[in-house]
Length: 352
Ligand SMILES: *Cc1c(COP(=O)(O)O)cnc(C)c1O
Image 1: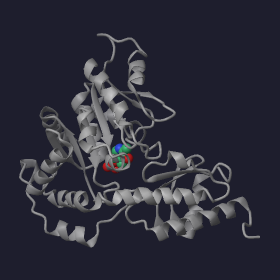
Image 2 (image 1 turned 90 degrees about the vertical axis):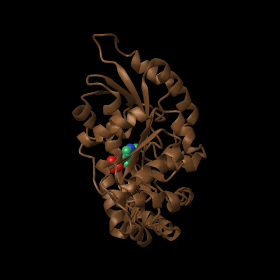
Image 3 (image 1 turned 120 degrees about the vertical axis):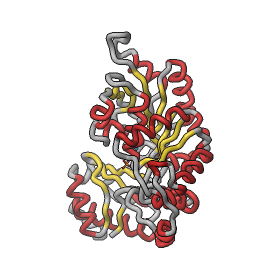
Image 4 (image 1 turned 180 degrees about the horizontal axis):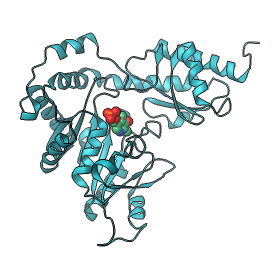
């Protein structure tokens, strides 16, 4: 089975498992897990930030960033399709009792004017809620792994700093953005107040996120992590896996992107489906199957029957993600399967 549903599906190699087995551990709630401490120090250097905290998941990292920077009844400005609104089951309302004030952008990029517009979209003052955080995403999952332009981030940061609003970046796939654009990780980190990254996406570690920001922020984040149930104990086994992924697997993301482009080009030869080749920047391909069937579940089910797992994303759109386990042969095979599925569904005999 070729599994292109996500980049969270990767499994640790034998070598990674060996490193996990040999990890030095301690109680991280006492600050005594050396492997965790080493990883946090490493990330502080890598991103040029004052503080870094190892967190069980990307969702928890985002929710801690919100809790630490937004008071109850106040607002987070974001885009309707970013992860914090679309995929986090409204945890913001439960955990922080804060409101998401969302804009919907065709291109998925919120800029300074959008923030200004949302800020002015209702009365402000002592009797109203106050925007305290802007949250952006990079790369943007819902927009096919699109990179968020650094110039737009800089403009946003100038604006939010000026207004006393915090800027958070959900960088679950920031390594993909870094590899695709060449913008240094430090440059991204320098232009936001807080950011989170995931080790369990394209990097291929089994677990964890790093939440980063200044010292004060990390001190509150540590308390909130405990409140949210994310203060763990001998967690160094996961920290060494994350370190291994940074040391040896980050480099493979470039290969994922190349393979994604190659696959997209091959897919332009499949009749009936449509993809926008120019919009593919990182490791994802969205395929529009409207011309064949609007039923994505039926489409994905057939793909599975032929040996390909893909994600029924939205009505009329299926998603493919290239991860480190996907080879060139898999890509060719997957395109062949998609050809067969399209043929079957459209009742056409291609080789007649
Ligand atoms: C995957 C992802 C997260 C975090 O997901 P977890 O499964 O909670 O680790 C956050 N934001 C984006 C954009 C993601 O793609």
